[in-house]
Image (cartoon, rainbow, N blue to C red; front, side, top):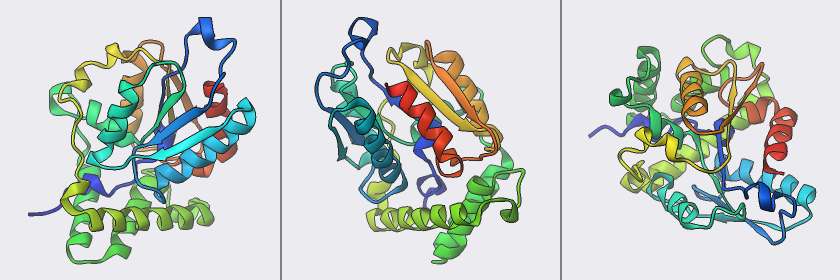
Length: 257
């Protein structure tokens, strides 16, 4: 049975940040205690690295400790359940990936489906993994998500490309070690139909050079989640946090503070 290509592709934190922030009445005194950031994946992966970088800067800005916890497993659903069960007071935050957004929105019954080009890329990646060629699988990811549909590899900062390739290789290794336990499992089957029920402040960050499907998903999240704030980072594809780190940090820290 072929492995699902969706399990290995890049899903950076940059595209979706959900935070259970306090309402206006308590915002004036926030925070009054330590903040916990629950990362939906194991330590050492892309989501974990970015979450720790943002948490460190958030801690310095808010003058309160920010504790990072890794609760990997079930495609991110263990962490999601923990955060959804916590009080929506801004002291328990979820650091996840766009896999959550894709699971919520990219389904045929929502009138949305990935393009043939993207599907072909996933098939190429999966074929590489089936023959044990991790290098080729990583390069497919770089071409699809770091370069994006409108740039050549030569037009992307080689340092960014190398760093993301290193992290993506590690993500693939973790997936291969996990086997079927690494499968994405939906927390709710119908959450793509329930975006209007999200009641916490939501920030959607996307690069303007990302794949068209990601831009469509960002549009849908912005329009269907009440009060969602959408920020587009120019000159970046699927990893704007790596290509434009200062702008990304500014956007996220302003949102969280």
